[in-house]
Image (cartoon, rainbow, N blue to C red; front, side, top):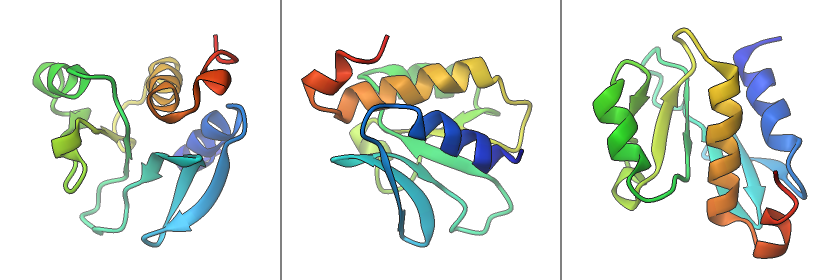
Length: 114
C-alpha cells in the first residue's frame, strides 16, 4: 500500500468524509477541506496539508522541520504540512488527521470521533 493509499484510508475512515480532486490532487472533505495531498508543486516531495489546532503548526515545524512545514497559501491560517517521503509514524498521522477533522467537521460529527 502506498503512502497516498494509507492517507486515503485514514481520511475515509472518519464520518461522512468524501474525496474529490481539487487543484489536481486528492483532497478530503467533511463539508469543507480538511486534508489535501500536496504533490502538485512537483518539487519531488510527497506531503499533505491539513487543518491544525492553534499553535500546532509552529510547534511541530520548530521541533521537526524535516517532517513538518508551513505550507504555502494556507500556512498563514495555521495549516500544517506533513512530509510523507520521510520515515512516517502512521500512529501520529492518524492523530494529525483526526485533529484536522475536528477543526473542520460539524460538532455532531466531531462527537463521533474518539
